[in-house]
Length: 267
Image 1 (cartoon, rainbow, N blue to C red):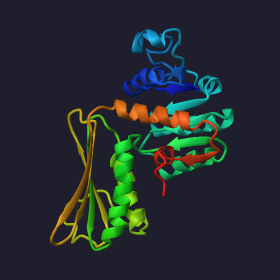
Image 2 (spheres, rainbow, N blue to C red):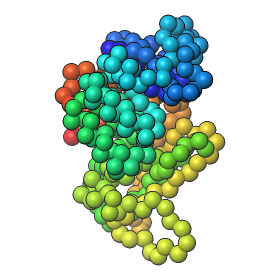
Image 3 (cartoon, rainbow, N blue to C red):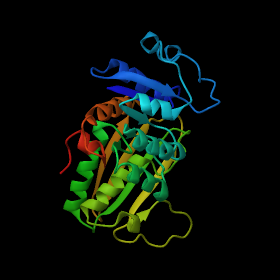
């Protein structure tokens, strides 16, 4: 499969390209950057070594989608919704790792997914997706009497909070307890907040250093506490998951899938 990468010159883009080169059944379909980027016009080999030579970074996302079987997008919400539209127009599968989208932006992605197959996930790692399933099961077993808090920490450059992964975990807990996540979500506390409401799912977001991603789901009762934790030490694991998702999309019907589908963990 020819796999294109938007944001090809960035840190994540370069990791994705290296993973494509290293993966059997995958080849680079091209790479783009935003118009005006100093990377536009340069050879991918300048960024990832000789395996990328011969591919020139462009600034025409439409051309990339037309030339690729699937495109991987770890950019920003405003770019991702434009890419979702291009995917639908070109019948090109899409893998989305972008987080922080608004409800309106997500609706645009969902509309595009009625025309083309997509994988969208707040986290592409096997470990996190296993943790998501375990969180759902534990929440279902413990019930509403246990308080749930999700704590996450990322590098200082991350621009959205809570992280997409934290929200995945919180939604899994809500699903396990048959709750409407948006009605019980508490994304921050400040000042005199009053007592904690039973059933709320709280979030705390920490930022500092170059932390790749730490996530802990805390289940707390009056007498005991259960903590489920995942720590990512290298962001290359996200690239590996994204390329695996890209290959999985071959032949899939139009829909918005997630990594649980890719990994066969749904159920």
